[in-house]
Image 1 (cartoon, rainbow, N blue to C red):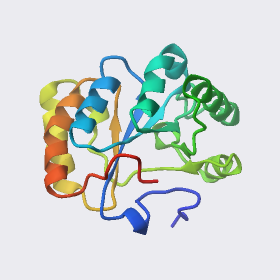
Image 2: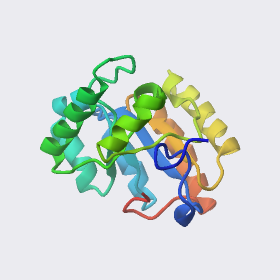
Image 3: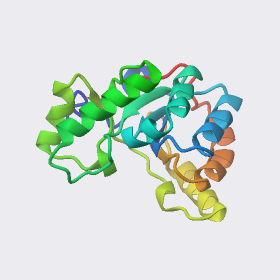
Image 4: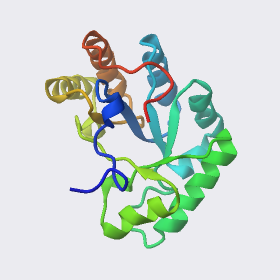
Length: 198
């Protein structure tokens, strides 16, 4: 068991009646803003783990995520899990997000979820909480809207209160997933109110 101080894999007890939607690998024009539109229809918010090089390319989109009431996490600058410069990757992403949004990230997600003892300690030394996930519907592998629908049903068949859900805002099939998942999660009273859980 990895302690939650090093790696949060499920929501803390105080908010375990809900689920947390997280989006990796953006921001992506044409996807990130539409995902936010769908979340806001249900008065809920999410945690977006952003890649620094995409924040650098689309700073206004990153800024709008914060302005619209969502949280941002650090997902490294280049999304390269095998890099020997992970400390620099974290720092560069942190600086890029701060410059674009005026926000200092508190959360970190390892690229591709690749963790080892040293990779767990490093974010903690930088005052970042590492966040993993407990529900992965494999939306990252979706190529079509039909794939997104299939992933949505996979998610709904497996999600339970307290789950941290792994999603991605780099491709449109995730939007099809949200159209199915959000109303069902709302019916199950699993969507948190806007403003963030962590």
